[in-house]
Image (tube, rainbow, N blue to C red; front, side):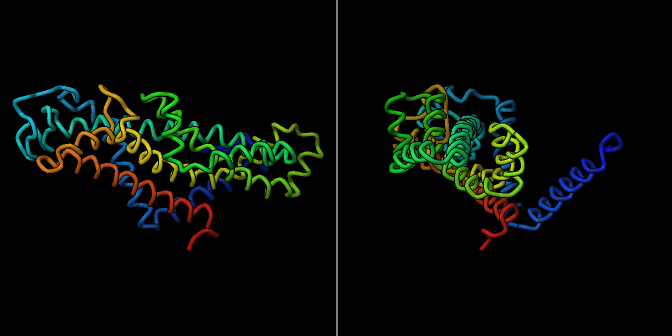
Length: 297
């Protein structure tokens, strides 16, 4: 990277950022659990994104001649379900949907929650009191229960699942952002910036937000894992992804009725959820240890 056209102060700032990023990566690379989590997440994401391009079967294609075929059968590496659909194909396509829902829900919750937390922590007073009481009311319900209640209002479907998970995620982001802002806003450099006439929006997004983003990255990584479990729970209860779309949760629901005769249907979808959630949790813990060493046990 060339810095010849930049001021000396800017060059030093860029060098410090580059060194900090390199140091963070080296710390993360030394964390074996985090690296294992990164490999697991990378594998699942790669297969979910690119796998469907290599699948020769339609995930909804039925084959009544090959119902409940055992894993390892030619043409059915992971077996088939009760109406002859290839389990491997459905897992790959289901992974794409499950990850899209989880990341989409996380993004919706993060955008809304961070905005609420920034405004609440910075404004204080009545604004803070009103916003936090709303968050308290939402937090009174368990995450999955709140998402389930929202789904009864919104109805089943992928877009509604993303919205429900996103709204249920808002209190967590809002509380974390507010807590960080309450600490950072009393720093001397924030007071100096305000004294120089910086607008509230500039203070919020250019000075406060960058100083709370590290904690939010950790929370977002762990939130994706929770969102995958929530989507699986909603789909398992029949309130999530609807046919012809397929997700790991819907496959798990289909496997419920044939646990005695074809346990592989539920087994492989359960393993996919387990590997992905475990991967995100390990990666999130590793990132937390790097970005916030004070939280390391």
